Image (tube, rainbow, N blue to C red; front, side, top):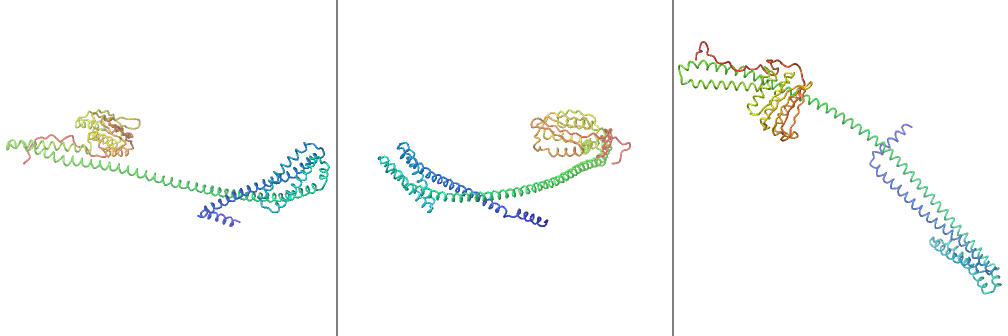
Length: 489
């Protein structure tokens, strides 16, 4: 039993996958529709034929009845000589003509020789009977009552009535046979239609079952695909998160490496170049008294050389400050921002309002705040065309908030401004510290760059070394002093 059911299911699966299933289904549906239409047409034809047969039967019964009515009217008139008995005779006479005409048309349409033969005998008998009755009435009207009664008592009328009944019964028998055949055809057609409807119902149920099965399979397949897509999406999100973390770590490492490199360069410039420039200035200071006595005309050139050395030392200080802010390491974040704002105001000629308060940030976060303000000042000087700049630093809950705002031309944040690389560097740098960068701007309404950084650790004391930088250079080279013993030239 189980192998047979398995073979049936295997056959159904093969049929469902076959390319001929749909054309076969269409052909079966067309065949069923054709059977249904054929059954309808046959049923309609049979019903129309039955209706015509019913009318013929009614006409036959009308012939019998109206013949009897005419005979009764004739006999009443002959017995009573009262004219009112002629009315049924006249009406029956007219109805008989109509009924016989309808029968002739009916059997002419059927083209049945036997029926037409019986109809001919019936028609002749009716005509003879009507003629016999009309003759008796005529003789009665002429006053020959005895002749009319003698004609009535003959067997002519009775014989004709016998023929009329026999022929009418023969025709009724033929009509009954045709009715039986018509009913059988109708029953056969209804059975065929019933079979077609049952087959269509079975096929519809089968198609519905296959459709529901296919729908469930499709739903399961879609659910499986969605599960696979969701799993792949989850893997991609994990991969994206991992790559983002790697890029963040890489950005943080690159920032740290850059700051380390800046600190190393600042140390080398401070130690090596600073020592060379200081030694050159000391040598020039030792040479100056001797040139004043031996070569007074070279004293002016020596003074210019000393000024050049002082300019070189000042340039070295600015480069070191740009590479690594010694004020941040020596004085702390608040003082470093105030010095940075003051120097920017002197260089740019803008009004810079500073409102900064001490906040507890890690040293790397302090350097991030300093670089953010420094980059914001650079962008303002290049693009903003501002008149006033505001710098604020304060604590907000468990975060520190720094903001640099200007009243310049602003920009559309949906577009990429010329300074977008600097802003992107700010964003990565702030996010590497676990913070969040916000940019608010609109054309003609200035711009504001703010960042929120988590508070960590204690405020570093003044004079502490930056973990990412180097020891700060001295505030300036020592003032030149004449050596106690002049060095030889």
